Structures are given as structure tokens and as C-alpha cells.
Amino acid sequence: MKKLIVKIEKLDHFGRGIARINNIPIFIENCLVNEEVEIFITKEKKNFMEGKVIKYIKKSPLRVESLCPYYDSCGGCDLLHLSYDEQLKYKENKVKEIIKKFCGLNCVKDIVGSKQFNYRNKITLQVNNNIGYFKKKSNDIIAIDKCLLVDNRINKIIHDLKHLDIRNVNKIVIRVTSFESMVVFYGNVNLNFDLNVDTIIVNNKVIKGNGYIKEDINGFKFVISSTSFFQVNNIGMINIYDKVLEYVDGGNVLDLYCGTGTIGIYVSKKSNKVLGIELNKEAISDALINKKINDINNIDFISGDVGSVLSQNNFKADIIIVDPPRAGLDNKSINNIIKINPKKIIYVSCDPVTLARDLNLLKDKYEVVEITPFDMFGNTYHVECVSLLSLKS
Image (cartoon, rainbow, N blue to C red):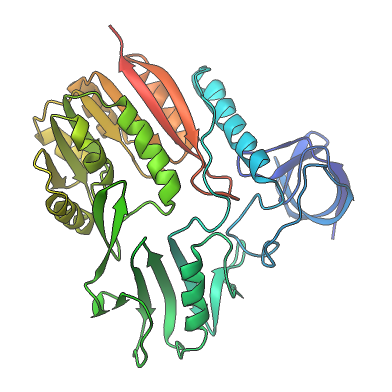
């Protein structure tokens, strides 16, 4: 086992400390800037190495003790050794660095924070004798009694599950809203028990309840099916949606990657017409229900690949809102957006690197007015952004 003593120079974009030996970077988890640590090398490649801390020789004054007993082995959190205020600074600076490096822009605003703990309304648990999370870089399961990131009602359900016979289950998804709860079991499940939840689904079969749960976000009602995407942090979601709403000032709005229609419905009151496009058919089914229960008449939804639907649709959009997956926009979608020629593009991103790539493809025609980072996933390196782009005259 190769041991080294190193000093941490900076944090990378995944929250890992970076040290150097002979100008070769070593990436080390659970480290902070200026800390001196003894490590052993876990991976050695030609251009980089990875290491694990054996001992902290000099600790940073910014270091805090993790409140989670699973932090050293669980793969869920990256920054629990850093106070929440410092986490926000790290994320804001990370976005600024990425946007400056790849786009040459200095338009990143102050980050908008959320909650550090108990913010998640959804959790996926792995099951194999134990119930828990995957260990970092492994398929081994770390048994957990509770998770600091999730709503405490989810932790109560985890406690109840521990007392049930779930030997043939291999995965469990738990979701809660302000009013209701859902548990989805996957595997060769013979359910011979009940749970104090509103909806139980085994694989794709509804065993108890309606097969969906309901949520209320600032007066709008939403139904959420087992496989539909819905933001996991309600406070963070409202912060982001309020920023998007701030940028909408009438006209026709095209809502791409619309999921269950949450953003489109949220901005419909300031729009002439809204059209949402989403590949997931179940999400569109939920979106149509959401349209009906909110009694909104100026919004429609289409299920299909965004690039293909845009090629075939003649909807005249003044504003385009995009909220793509982590991979960002594909070239077909970008080309179609440019052809539509909207006055504004509002880009909601969950990865600042793919955001920067896409902004570079749009900035010849569009001015990037401002980018606001949002914390949706406290204690992790992830950061969301909302960007406003305006058509150049």
C-alpha cells in the first residue's frame, strides 16, 4: 500500500480535494483546502491518481464533524464535512469558475440556498437482507436506520420496513408529499403485509391507493405517479420556479422536457399559451390530469422526443423554457430552438458543465443576461442553475 503525505490545494467540481505529486493530481474525498493528510493511493493512472485519507495531520478550521454515522462509506453525500454556508460558497464559486472557463462570462449571481437536512421527498433503497444505500463505488449495501437528507416521514417508513418480511424485494422507492405517501416495491414480491401509507405499488401493479399521490405547490395541485419525475426538494423547487416566473412576461411559452407539467402550469398565469413536450408518456398523463385539476385552459401537452416534436410542430413561441436531463440539450433541439427564434430562452440546468457547453452554442444569437445558482441537494456537490438568454437585436 503506497502511502503519501500531501497538502490539499483546492476542491474539484465533485467536492474532492486535489493534491499534487510531481505535478500529477491526486483526487481525495473528504478533504478541504490547506489540509495536510496522510493518504494511501487507491488508483494510479498515467495522468492522475486517487487516494483515501488515513490520517488528518492538519485540519482546516472550516471542517465540521459529520452528523451521519454512514458518511465515510455511503455514496449519498460529498460535503457533510463542510458547514452549509461554506457549501453554498463552494457551489457558487464552482458555477462561476465553469461559466468563466468555458463561456468567458461573468454573469453568475449569488446562490439561493435551501435546507441542509430533511429536504428530500423521495428515496431509493437497495435491498439484500439489509435495507440501505449502495456503498461508494460498490454494489455492497450499507444498512441504514435513517437518512439525514430525507423527510422524517420517510425515515418513519424505513423504520416500519425493517420489521417486515421483504426477503424477495430488491429495491424500494419511497415518496412523500405534503399530504400523502407512496411506497413502490420491486422484485419477486409476495406482499403479505400492509403499511401505513396512502399508496403501495408492487412493480407496476397498484396494491393500495390510487397509484399516485398529490402535492400542492403555491396553490397549484399536482399528481405524481410512481415513475414520473418530480423535483425532490420542494423549497428548492419553489425557489427555481419563482425565478423562472420572474422572467415570463406574457406571450406564448414552449416548455421543453416538461415532466408532469409543473413549470408550464406554474407560469401559465403570466402566459398567453403554453405547450409542454416530454418523452415520458406517464409524465404526460400526469400533466394532463394536472391541467384538469388546476382548471387551466391555456396549456397543452405532447408526448414525444423533444427534437422530433419541434421539427414537426408549428407552435410560435415567444419564450422557450428548457429543463433537460443532466446530459443537456442535443444538437437537434438546439437547432430547432434557434429556428423558432424566441425572444427569450430560460434554461434550467442540473449540470453547469453541460449548461456551459449549450450556452456556447446559443450565445452567438442570444445574450446570456444572467445565471442564478440554486442549491437543491444540500451536502452534495450538485448545483442547479437558471439562466436567462435574450435574443440579440
